[in-house]
Length: 405
Ligand SMILES: Nc1ncnc2c1ncn2[C@@H]1O[C@H](COP(=O)(O)OP(=O)(O)O)[C@@H](O)[C@H]1O
Ligand SMILES: [Mg+2]
Image (cartoon, rainbow, N blue to C red; front, side, top):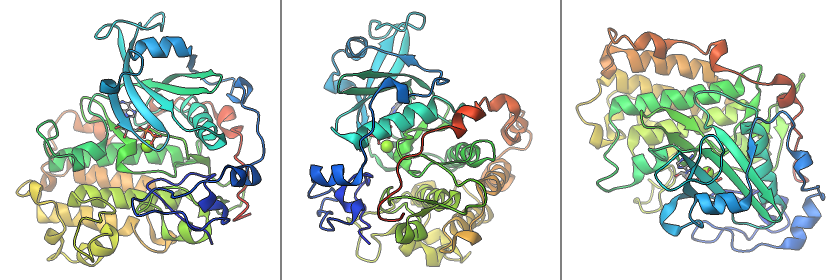
């Protein structure tokens, strides 16, 4: 089948073509790449600005400007790294959008593609076109992009608290353990972002839901970032879209791994994995754990369904902050999202409703008299969603996978 996931699978990787199955090394990265396989599997595509949807409401930056804004991509201003490249902190003038002195104007995050080839360009373009079209309080805001010769960069609003991954798994004085209440708030925000993507007017499958792609603002509002693997959902009476298998080990739904058939319920499974990571404080895959505990879902599932056993999987840094009832409901929600059969998973609207109830309930440390609760409980309103439907539906579809066509 050629299914092969590394820390993050790239569509063009030889792994996914089935041509080369020897592709995961012990450190989880691809052990070999072959550019001629790339050209076999991917049709040539123009790499011009014409591919960027006209209605994209984003600004074009020059490379020189972003170089200056990030002080020549200074290593000490790196905010994070992912499969696509490094993300740097920078400053621009909020009116002219030109580089500003550090500490003045508007703070930005600049992601710089560090891989050559079509796949990097494709992911870059997907981010420009999806994030350039989609507006929601739980999606990170794309300010602009740079396309100049081989340079591919993306400019986002700066998210001061960084990724959920750092808060859950980094140790150190800066990263204090997130409280139970904050974990529920972050889970709810991220769920609303996914629910928006899956909604009838948007119909986008995110495909790479994981803690490093959930960013936090200063108030711990969660925003989804990294739309490189996002894909239009099925249309008409189709039940799924066929794709190469891409995503991240530990997060991808079993049926997607087995067949390449992608549905919104694949994202729901990944959401279940993240919820479980938040409840347990453990990574989806952790080779440093004793054998039998490497895969979080496999290890935790038997405990999730049992009221008397769930405390065994709960992060002991949360002790005393939750009621057993609240913990059981959260664990049960994770379990339902992780159903092996996709049809038994809830949809993201149901997940949002369940998390809203948990977040605001007394047993989870919520406060019904909190005047902001009414706002939190509010379902998405027209004001939250400003989306250009025509443009979204005309998003160019990536080519069909030779594996799963
Ligand atoms: N807007 C931002 N503000 C603050 N940190 C960010 C921002 N965007 C990304 N990061 C940091 O960089 C990391 C990688 O970003 P991501 O967009 O996921 O890149 P990739 O596409 O390479 O996976 C994130 O996990 C986060 O730590
Ligand atoms: Mg990422």
